Length: 619
Image (tube, rainbow, N blue to C red; front, side, top):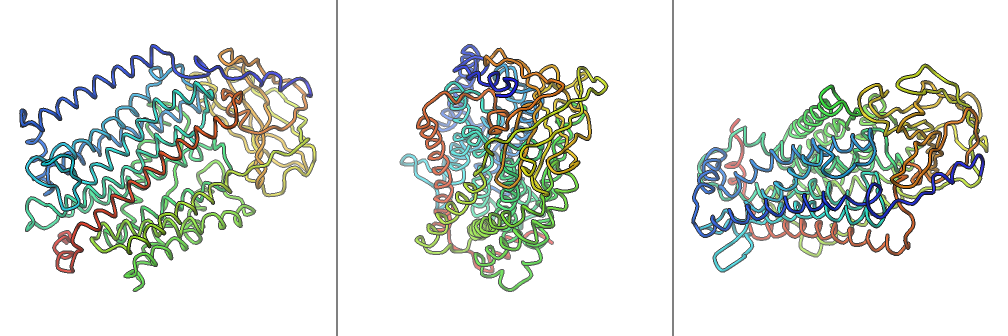
């Protein structure tokens, strides 16, 4: 290989330690702390169930009087609101730390992990509170019997289950790293468990609030605008929760093809906004996207501003999809909920995404090139229709209307899962060009904490990249946050085309210290990279890839450069089996949410026009 570049990339990640799982002393501390907290909470729950304490019930009832909801709904919702925002801040902060600094020295060395753990732990606690609180009542006709006299609301079970699913991701993540090394990507299987559990818990919250609305302490008291606003915020939380799968794109360090981003945007938007519009009425989608934008903006300022001083992040606006959904709601067809949801999904995946692309082009690192749109639409349209159907079915439940018969709704859920799986599989398909390489010449620029360079790059073959690629860029990341480090640990330079196969940098990039600087290309299914500079990493046995003044290196699979700490020294079946375990857990969560929604819809009487008028907020 030219100049021996790739021998130094070949160090396998250690099964534990720096490149693998957490240090055992940190595992012991975290496990012990979690165990103590769990025992305390179990003890409080036991004392409440045996009526040896009354303060928990008094707090719940006091909140219940404020919101006109049973205490087993009011207290868990108040807990949930605080904890999920804590988890979101910790999550965005954690991603920014990995982008700016690289892997953790350990779970206790990363301050963001404390926010994530606290948020997820008390998310689970909020669900358990809804399960534990009912003493002398059956919390609605859909409640699940636990003992002879103890019934739990369905929404509480789902929130607790989603929280438990997310929490299980933490110990599994450590096991994963010990086997496969550090996969520094948001889309690692166990990472998806963490964010998926938190995101989908919002469905349980909405169902729990519905159960509470049908068991109000004062049924003659009219709903206030504040309660309507709180429900809109819950839908905004659902939109945020479904958006976290896109966060690598928000930072501009996505490790997967760009065509997946619009598919993920339309999935989140159609589920949350279609459900919100049918449930809450006119103008609700604008409130939902406004709430989501404010929350994400506050978090972005906290993380990327002077307080934490980490790499900046942006976020989808969803305003175009919201406008499309609001306009389509004016059609009489909106009375046919599921068909209307499908039509909204189609419009969201076309007109809505085009409107969203204007925002993407203005503020994101990687705009959507015109050449990507045929594949974009082929993936986004079926996903949008599927998301619109899911959102409509959720709204049908929350409106107290009948779902389709069981065979039909089960077929719809299976079809939605199959559509999303097929679109995702297509988006994950990549090609690494054989024999492709780049001749790179580096020219020194003024130092910024170390050596900075401009790059002149000539590709072989010259037609490796077309005229409208998703990106051809130099990415420098994990250079450390703060101090003299440029770009807060992240620098991205979109190269300027100087001729066929000839590209030049537009700004200096770092090639010193702990930086990992690489040339990246994505053009259609082609996704490849080569290192320009990689710092030595004794923790995984990797030597430095030097930034020579002139060199020629081959293109390789991008994952081998971006996820340098990851170990590929294991049987293929082991990774497949481990991934299937995570997939099975994820499908179980989806099945549980579907079961809960169907149970509520089947057990509660379907609302009449009189009931709907009674439930309406005060003008």
